[in-house]
Amino acid sequence: MSDTPRLVIFVHGWSVSNTDTYGEFPDRLQTEAEAHGLELDIHQIWLGKYVSFRDEVRLEDISRAFQTELNAKVGALLADGRRFICITHSTGGPVIRDWLDRYHIGVDKLDCPLSHLIMLAPANFGSALAQLGKSRVGRLKAWFDDVEPGSGVLDWLALGSSDAWELNRAWFDYPDLTGLDRPIFPFVLTGQSIDHKLYDHVNSYTGESGSDGVVRLAAANLNATFVRLVQEEPGLLPDTDPPEYQAPSLKVETLARRENIAFRIIEGRSHSGKKMGIIRSIKNDNLPHPTVTEVLRCIGVENSIDYNNLCKTFAQENIQIMDQERIAKHFLPGHYFITDPHSMVIFHLVDDHGYPLDAFDLILTGKDNDPNLLPPGFLKDRQRNQKHLGTVTLFFNHALMTGCPALMDNNHIVRPARPDSQELGVRVQPHVTDGLVHYLNAILEASTEQLKNFLRPNETTMVEIVLRRVVHEGVFRLSQDRTPTSFKHDPEGPVIE
Image (spheres, rainbow, N blue to C red):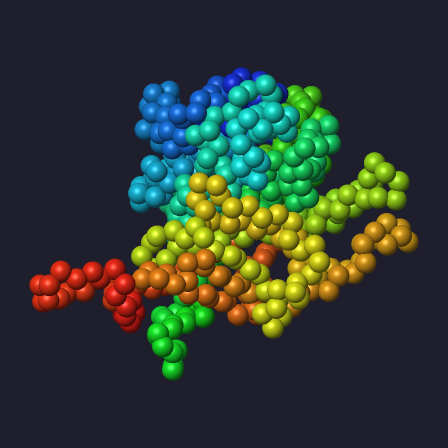
């Protein structure tokens, strides 16, 4: 155990304007700390209050202000070697991760005062709700309580935002945080239940399977994959006049995994609400509460061995919880809510000079590169980021893509067995395919390996696709002919190598 008790800092989610958002959790944690002999400094429990309901405030502004306030309020304690545990909810997770990247890991300042980062329902890869727009999102009971949201942080939360992409891309370059001299232990705890009292019949995302009504499990989980696909060099097609080129193949240049990050599904919990909310439902009544139980287990981790053991235990328990919560009775007789594991894939398209692509078709293919050979109902959602049109996020039903046995309620078949899709591929068809500067169609051949690498249950895969920017010699020519001559219709010429 540590020699000195740790401080505790709570950090709330987006568009909160009152510390009642923490409910009775701080009092409950203090009670549990005293009862269980946990080494927490109960006199140093701090409640975060950050402004995100103003349009001009961005997520990076909040993390910078957090650093300033940290120095002002507890800087002397931290300078003496004290460390703190941070418990976040929703957007609070990305806020502290941005702070961690900005002031410590991202700048190789590894002597960090943060020991445990316990994220409750964090929107690490964003939320599908964010792109609905400020006015519509502000009316959702699932996320807000009569608080006007701010667009600065909302832009970060939109699936596929450039800021979220950069923070999550850096995640794959981090060292093993649990193996540092002063280790940092990250945890993600999230529910997959829907509080139907908070369901918005206009916005079906609030009842989306594979989410807690606001954040998808795959978007919370920091076990993730990064893939970089690069198009081959253009080649001249024989016997073509004018000359035509092709570069059909996408090749895997990078395949990186971030795994063994503690991830626990909290049974019966949703994102918000006093009845089922992962944080608001906590009472200081000493009665068992799944969030409290799992937070205490996280706090009890003191070294990398403890952490790795808890990761394995969490993974086993998640399988049991997924099975227990797989089927629930619907309001209508004979109907059911089915909670399948889902996968999220964020496609980010750029050319080999770093320019984003904003006009293309992205087509998924199955066996034999045929888009018709994918399972019915496999794709649950598709969003293009409205500010970064080169980024598209797809949400897959992992069970339907990889196959699953029949789901039964006693002797009643709720859903028959589904075969797996066997293979997965991607075809990119840019809209600008001719002219002095253009792009060429590209394909990642469908394979079983692609299906395995791209789709993992309750995880996100970031896929960067790099297309070749095809530039013809006709963009610039030199001439010694001093006679005034139009070059408006000069031939495009061959492609610059």
